[in-house]
Length: 295
Ligand code: PMT
Image 1 (tube, rainbow, N blue to C red):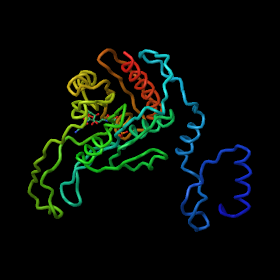
Image 2: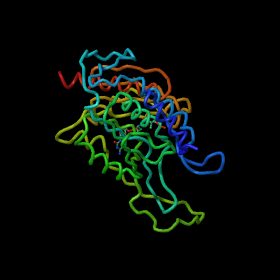
Image 3: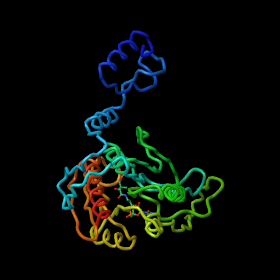
Image 4: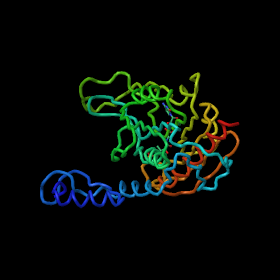
């Protein structure tokens, strides 16, 4: 039906009148046929719609929607010239061909940040561990599995980015001796020797030329104290501290609540959806990036 000449004629007429089309998606139709004609996923529709309402001039004034304590620069910056690299989701470390060590990161926070950056027209690249989320539309996305893969892809991209946001929950340890066959259940206890993974953020901060680096801190206790230690130890420009361990926010929730910290100040952003929060965070990050650039 979508390919029918009458449908296509009507579409052409509407396009000439300046109407905008979202979709259709491809897939199995109600009649049993396969092809274009399905409604886009509601989340994708909402994302595309919100994108349509963002200014598209080449000089977009930096937005200030979240009234955070960061300096209003009043600078017009070509947002599409800012390249942002974002990591998202978990990494997984195999122990045998069918089992692995990982964590409950869903990728929602990192994908929301990529979406928010794209909405502002920023040049966005996402490096994602394995998630169940739909592949982000119109965002350059690189999929990885292990911490080593993520490390390699970040290092491949890092020299061509202005802002690096590490939202991924990278595994801290990996199994060096991966069993070649499925480990048998013997009834005895099993000992695994785990080796620390390389810290991506730390190694990025040690490069000769560094982008504006934003880390996340996922903590179950002493949130601000531990986040501050990570900010200093990993030599970050900014860290986003989030409490984890509750289904109401953090890992795998649609919601999050964070405190944004730099060496100078800290701002708490209350619980809201990850996309709302991501929009605030991207604004804060861009403002701070500009502030440091012109300082
Ligand atoms: O994916 P969601 O379900 O939406 O959940 C979002 C989240 C809770 C995963 C996210 O908001 C978050 O907190 N991400 C960071 C999780 C984490 O690994 O925190 P950490 O405190 O262990 O690590 C600190 C920072 O170092 C992080 O930016 C991490 O990406 C980085 N890191 C960690 C280990 C490593 N080998 N290399 C790294 O770069």
